Length: 266
Image 1 (cartoon, rainbow, N blue to C red):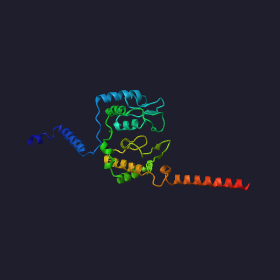
Image 2: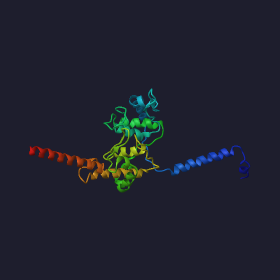
Image 3: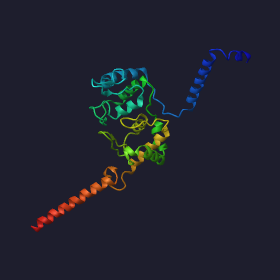
Image 4: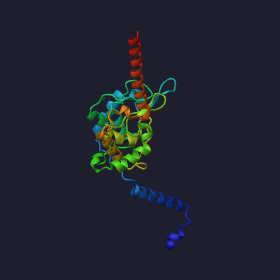
């Protein structure tokens, strides 16, 4: 103890204390960090095959080093992919949004251009560039373990303002839109919450836990299974759309009757 006390005024003592504090902080963070969806393991062959696919299909916009690129006018051609994680690639490529068919305010869903193995390899390469959200495990996609009631509450608080309460999507600004989320592959719904594609905010696991995301997916599947109890959904956009349909049909019938009565009177 005397030896330690004698060295407490040593010039390196403060540095040692600081290093110990940093190690303790890091250990506590690892010990108490929220439960996450485990990343899939990739081999070096997957990474190399993914890099070849990237250079052939994605480097034109995202740059050969995946750090993004801009055109001569300074407009972004493609954002950096460093740190977006495997989940972002699996979502964008797995839904056909990437590679984009043409530039625009938003990437449209279309038939995908890469098969599952190619998508996995491309995800492996992008995941190797920096840490990011992983493709979710099947455990977090098993809706038999989810709570649709809780998922509905989470969806209405966080998602309904853009996707509407029925999950049918809606228009945003400047040609952008929130796509329908009913009938979407559960894995892609989870990945969208995890990565925040297009105009969507990121719901990381500090905002919504894997269990919360599974509950949201369960709610969406419940919506799909129930369908539209009232008959024709009319886009599930509420009374404005319903009123528009009603007035259009009623006015058309009234005009038809007026024309018919006028013709009879002649």
